[in-house]
Amino acid sequence: MRIYRLTQRGYALSHSTRNPQTPEWGVIHYLAKIHAASTEKLVEGVPGATPTTLARLMRKRILVEETGVSV
Image (tube, rainbow, N blue to C red; front, side, top):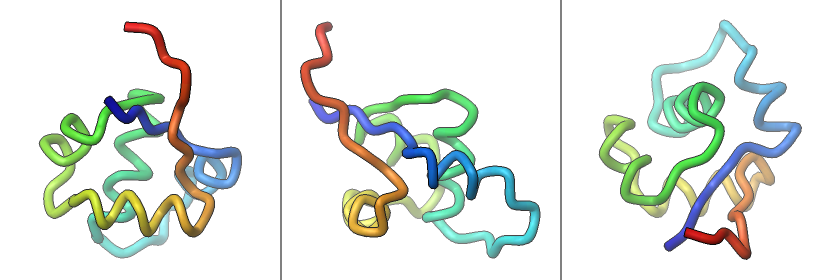
């Protein structure tokens, strides 16, 4: 299970009020509210979000994947 959270840069971006209504921004704002989520939860909770969207945000260093999460 992959768990994602925002980086410091991601949290800073989440405070922006001037942004387009894209899946990328939806993921940023969604994670700012709930702090961490799995791939499935993000895809279900954010309209238009896909695993490719998450990979793009990771490349931009806005998201990080949590490791060593115990369930």
